Image 1: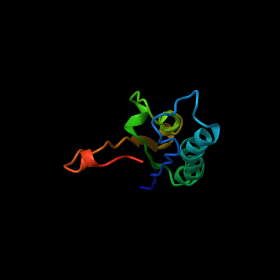
Image 2: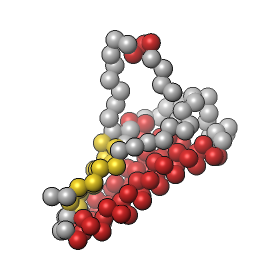
Image 3: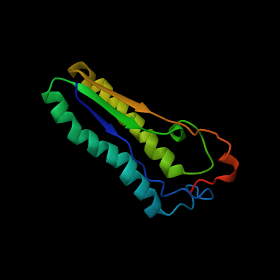
Length: 120
């Protein structure tokens, strides 16, 4: 069976103080370009060969941020939620053609050094 895994992200809006009222549009656009549009383009190129071979699987790496309301990373969270919508669309439209689509949302692993670390 064939498959494709898209595993990447832009964290251009990783500054906690930004919200929709003050996030620079260029930063918003960068997260959406890489995360949402990137997943779309990957699917666009992966689907034809998967259909030609009679099926397969597409896997997108998402984030818990797509599900949880947070005071930071509004564009990142929105872009990863868009990936979930794309995953559901692919599953509904191409599932009958033998193509499965899933998203995984790995989380943070808390460890002894966690309190000393900062996410940038």
